[in-house]
Image 1: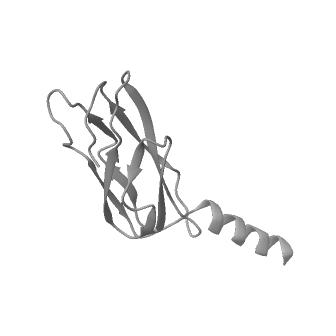
Image 2 (image 1 turned 180 degrees about the vertical axis):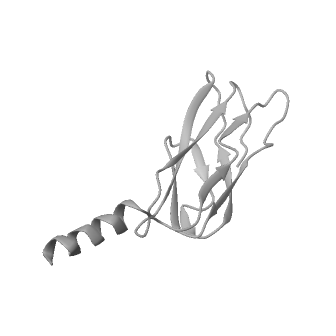
Length: 115
């Protein structure tokens, strides 16, 4: 009888009954703040999920208007002015039960403040 119980538990785990339900995705997966051609455009990320989620910038010059929540959301990404060289960073989106998703952020040199 014990063997049967173990088999049922293992089957439930491996065949999806304990997997998260629904989707977790973002769009776009990269944003370029190019101040020569399109200042401050393309600065939102659409997040699709029914789970609880967080958004964490990798650098102090990248900002998100919402650091977390539950369910679908549009997150605004802004950057501080850049008086130096071009730079890159990320925003990591994590949702309960899913693998994290990275949104790559690039900013050209000598840009204005988009916040």
